[in-house]
Image: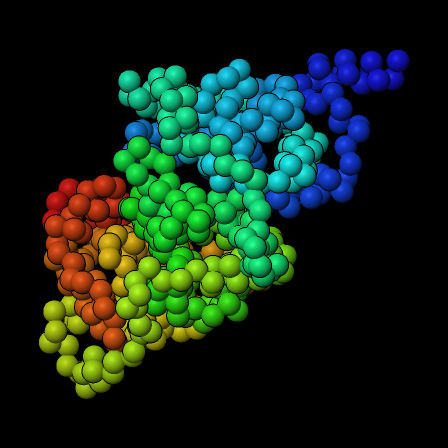
Length: 436
C-alpha cells in the first residue's frame, strides 16, 4: 500500500516514482559527473532555473534551444534509464527522433555504464523538477526536418564503443583521456568539424585533427590543445594547466569566451586528481607541426617602446590602450593580466579571438580558489577598424610572436556580426555599430 501511494503521489507531482529508493552515494557521484560534463551550462537559460533548458545556442544552421532535463513531466520525468541512455549516448530522443548534434552524444558514447547509471540517479533524484516547456529551435526548412538526422547519424555518428584505455597507457593519463574524450566532450569545441557538422576526429586514434582547434563560432576560436608551442599547449606545464582549469588563470594566461563557463560551471568543481589527469593527458598529445619550436622572446620591441619609439604601425595604439595592463614588454602581470609574448591565443592562424577581445573586451570570472574578478574593457567604441587591425597585427608580431598580419576588413567583418560600440559620451550606453 505504501509503494502504491508513493507511486500515485509521484505521478501527480510529475516526479520519479522511485524517488524514495535513491542511493545517496550514487546521486552524489552523478552530480560530480554532471559537473564534469558541464550539463548545466547548456541546459540552463540566463537567469533561468538549473537544467530547465531554454538557452539559445547559435549554430551554422540556425538557433537551437536547449531542452528541459529536470525530472518533471515537461522534461525527462518519464524517462526510463534506457530512454536516458539512448538520448545521452546515442542521440535518440524518447519516441525515436534523432537529437541535433549540438548534444555531443558521440563523445558521451564513451561514458561507462556505471557512470551513466550514476548520472541517471542524479537527474532523477538530485535535481529539482521544473515545469517548463521550451520553444522549438529557429531553424529554416528543410534543415528543420528531423528525419534526415537519422540518416546523418547513420553516416556521420556511428556507434562509438565505451572508453577503454590504450595498451600500456599510464593510469593517470587514461583517466584524463576518459574525461576529455567522454563527459568533458572537449572535442565538441576544440576539434574542427566537417561540412556535414560532425567532428573530424573523436579521439587520438582518429589522427592529429583531434583537439587541433575550431573554426570561429560566435566571435571566438576554441584553440588547439595539442603540443604545438606556437598555438597549442606546448609551452604550458602540467601544473599551469591544472591551475588554469581550477581557477581560470595561470601565471601567464587567463580564461575568456566560452571557456569561462566551462571553468565556472565545471572544471573548478573537479577533484585535483582528475584535473591532473586531464592535464597529463593533454600534455601527452604531440604537436601537429613537426617543425614546431618553443617561443623565443625578442626584446627589440620592448626596448624601442621603453625609449619612446612608437613608430611601428599599431605601437602608439598599443601604448595608449594596452600597455598599462599588458606592459610594454608584453609580459603582463601574473594571474591578473595575461602575457601577450608567446601567448598561443595571440599566434593562432585565425585571429578571431584576439580581434573580438579588443573589440568587446572580456571578464576573468571569479572562482572558489581565485575569488577576484578582472575585466578588460572593449575598445570597439573608440578604435576604428584600421586601428584595431594595426594594434592586433602589432601584438601578433612583437616580442617573438609569429602571428600573421590582420586587415581592417577582418575587423569590420567581426564588428558587423554583433560587436557594439558606445556613443563615446556615456560609456554605459551601448549602441550598435553602423560603420567604420
